[in-house]
Length: 368
Image 1 (cartoon, rainbow, N blue to C red):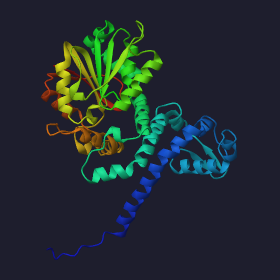
Image 2: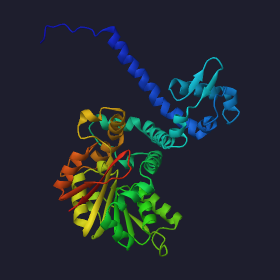
Image 3: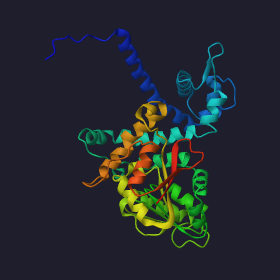
Image 4: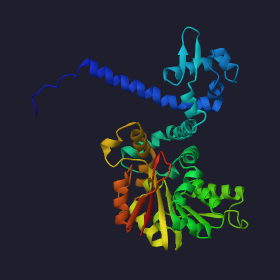
């Protein structure tokens, strides 16, 4: 036993760490505040309006003025609004409006708020599973989590990004245009799957997911759009089936996609191996994963922090819940180097990063 007496850390260092905790609390609550601004119209009321008093902002929305007052002050404290104490006015800077009102920021935060509501509701069960070393699957979440994740996907993986990625893959793009087949593995609510069906109306499109409630939602949405089984020629037909990634049904696919799903799968190596077996001779895999760096130290930044947090709270617990005795290690947040190594182990000889505008993702083409 050591006889050295532990010294108390300097008071300044303790205060600094406590300051971080307070900052954390403000930032976490700020997600909900930003979402409130989107849903109530407060951001829209401020955009391009110049300096406004509390009363002037309140007159533009249906929110009680005292609530508007506190919301404005909170956003000023967060650095999103400029406050002039001489006039008591608040101004939304153009750069903030460009991100929240006219860019993807507002929609991303609103999607996160929806997911957070589910995480909060189920946190007791999740923390118990986490603390006992158990996984926590998609099927254990609430519908708010599934809807929030889909809303996030709609912003991060828009149809134009999907079109650009497939367009960079000459063989699969031509095959799909001519009526080829594609399988989307871990399709969730099927937003990218149905985007492909819309982009390639002649193609045969299949989406699979282990989660039966998600597949039920996909089928209902496809029927609502008139794109389900039985749709007329040129309608962009798509079908959905409940299946594990390693049990992908069918053969001879011209394209197999993993849209932000491989890291959610209990056996990522097995999923890639099955995809390779199911490809047509000239087929390829489109692998889209969060934009992580190769080395941990290069992810120790705000973006990496967000991705690691989502991985800890949602993605990796889902993967752990699907594991069997023969499963490979859950992927987590992986950089390009690890993804290339995993692809090589699964039997892909050619891996190419596609040159497409994907600010939040790595986009890779895998070929046997």
